[in-house]
Length: 147
Image 1 (cartoon, rainbow, N blue to C red):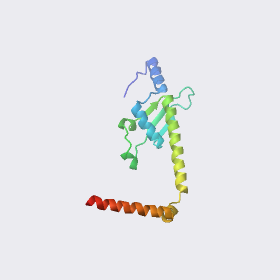
Image 2: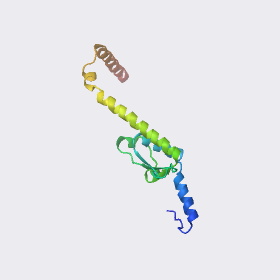
Image 3: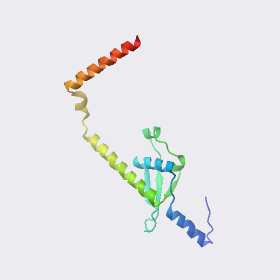
Image 4: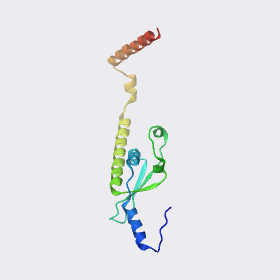
């Protein structure tokens, strides 16, 4: 951890100004944070909500769970720290977070309205005959491949 001499007011102000501006994540880390934002796995807050001039953001990335851990790579450094982002990247991540929430909500609405039962148990005659022909083709292909 970096220490700042309290007696040097000028360096203290400089350090505070650096934090107020925030910093950018690298391209790889930003893409990872954006993927996690789309999944709703980030928490963001204004660095100083009372200061209207300060547009930096605090970013915390939550670890992945379940199936997503098998598909999405996340840099350990991204997970183990609270990041201070600059205004531009912070705004982009909030937009991605919002877009992901809207997309997932639409999928949940579609899932809630979907009728699985009728689609599986009451197939039209056309679908049944098409499936039987394709099943017959598959079994014929299996027999010929074993010869």
